[in-house]
Image (cartoon, rainbow, N blue to C red; front, side, top):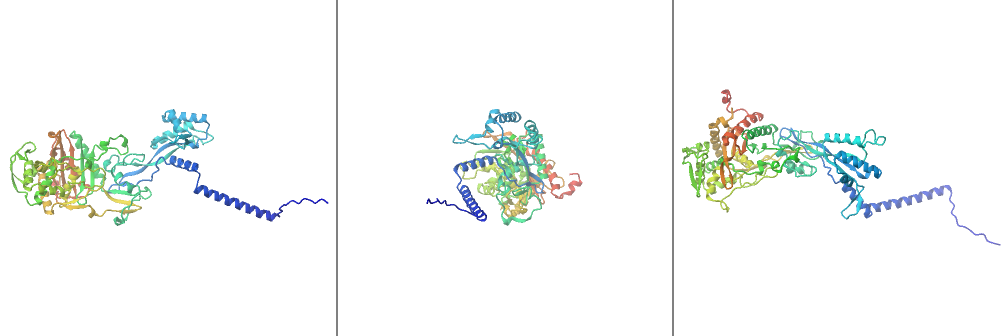
Length: 602
């Protein structure tokens, strides 16, 4: 009898089949998770390269945080944030035929002014990498930077030529084309304080001014020391910036007055340019730093490198007779002279084989030290230096800070050029010429701070333009004692020199006097060395002083380069000092200390 073959088979009931399904599904899910983890932790090289290329393409243009804002000392905004745009084509999103792509490129080239071949290469599906092999192209920048007005114009024109009704909506742009916003800096006061504020160019370029020196704070990369904290800030700016914001020592109205008076003075005297610096004598804070010519920080590409430099700190000059204040300060403080010390002026003197003459080649005969300062007699200044000797004189030159940078918190400060005894180029004649600011070169800021030190009872301060830093709603301020440099002369010597400077201004009251206020100052008319010799008509006219002399609040330096209509410091710079003092003292709430002059009409 034949045996029947037996076949093996599994039979499951309905419940058992469901369990098997769950088990197999779970095993499959575990395998997929395991494989996914493998891909995440060890992706194939091709995937890695593709991701890197995509990230590089998307990150080729910076997407920066909003920088901190900048305010003047009264909380008025000087630099705020705005937005500009770049027009981009997301090439990988274009889902069109080659014929349609060519039509689009043709239209874009016409609207944007591109060369058709260059645009084809920019918007190609693939690009050659460094190895010469093709790789996907994601991104083409069609317009690098446009403002809001230009954006609207482009949008309207592009919608007109590229609209795809029925696909993108009425007049809408294709989804592969768009404007990307990026932050820019906007200056609501225009050119005001341009050399101090500087510029920041998000698409490349060298930052200048405060934008450079405080970049790490403005971007939020750096925070102030907790020891500087002074409490919460009253400015509601936390939502307007990602970085720290700055409150400057600059007073917007004083800066404006300085710039207006400087421009008028330069133009009226057909000068090449100039600088005005206003210093808070007690703190060293810069209330104004004006230069002419200046520039528009919102149109930086139109400005030459020479104009971008801040001449108040980056250019040195021979200060001329304003430097006699250092000579007199040294002589008074060392006890060698008094205001009534007698001198005889022959009109010329030989020092180290070099003949020194007075400006205008005038001889004054018998004079006192204070009268020699009033009439700015070079011969007497030279004799004072010869009495002191090189060691004493140059020790005070160093004390006043003319041997190093001031250390102001702005970039680009230049070193003074001073020859000291022992230097290979120093000669005995320098002791004579340096007494009246010839043969020695300093920045306008150096000279302004020396004058401020006399006003500040002989205490030299470190100049600075930032008063507070605001981070996360908290205000920080560097302690005032951090700005104290050194006592350069005694308070008594400073007081005596101040009285002598008051006599200078009182004698030349029509040019330099400030009605209702006592003022202390000194003129300067410095010949400019050209080709190794000094030219009588090529000069820098200056005036430096402070007001009120009885209780100084501000020191002011006015420097005018190469005036051609009247050339002396008395004719050119002193009236600018006078006008600026008249404008800014009321702004600071300083009451007149000579009210009788106002009653008599000045």
